[in-house]
Image (cartoon, rainbow, N blue to C red; front, side, top):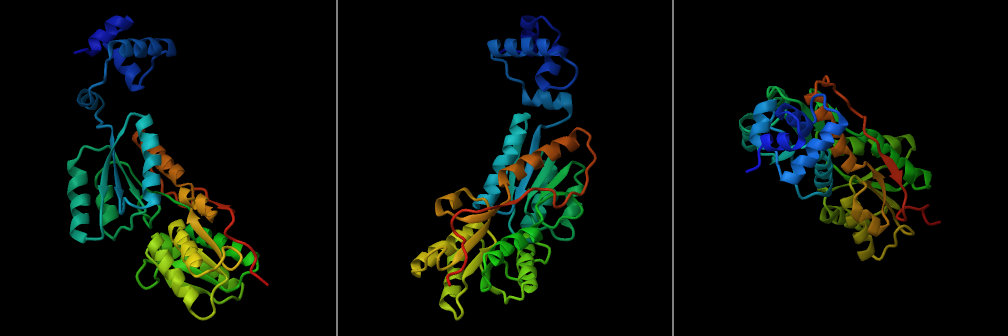
Length: 332
């Protein structure tokens, strides 16, 4: 089996230089690094993960905690995290947690402590009063994407502004009977992402002197379709719908088709996310660049590993209105 000594002999350098060249740490000239990399490739040398961990004191693995794996947003953010970590030679250890308190406690208080990981990234996780303290107690960098996590380094879009922007777009087109499909105010935390989007909607409707309509759904295509059917079957059918996710917006588009309504001639529909599927429905959306969020989180956790001071950052991620063909002025 080829070892680091073989690479050193082939490249004509010391084993310490080989180690620095392959790890990317320490001072090595570009010419020497290229010679070492060429020798390693010629010999088929692969760095031992165990040996690298012992030498650096790092496992070169980052734990990622998500509430769901089967939704576009989470899988796309995860892809962005993978882009950033794999490029720097880090692996991902994935944890999916439900709302069950016992299961969450096992993950936060046991699994994350037992596994050798260098940092943790959470994705849109709503943490209870104790969980941020448990995470900080791990003594490793923790970065949260979205979710109300004031005690942690948090990267998020301004979801209140997202809700306002989507609603303002419909109001500017001339709509006044606008419905929102999203979080149920009686069950969602006031600082959660869905609740903030709903509040942004309500604020803009109130400022315009318009009466907001609402239907609750579970952030799936099926949920959005069911909520939209209720709105279409009720009195005072809305001329426009703002759904708090693209998946619910796509469900609303499908429900409109089933009801014989044309989009956008009879009803305008806008979502949030930038879901790739929305392009095939011509869906107007607020793009929050989900893959980029993951890449930014990977960059932040690696920066803290390299000595950057952790900082609470909120509202730092970009979003933009992406107009396609699902919104238009209301029919005369």
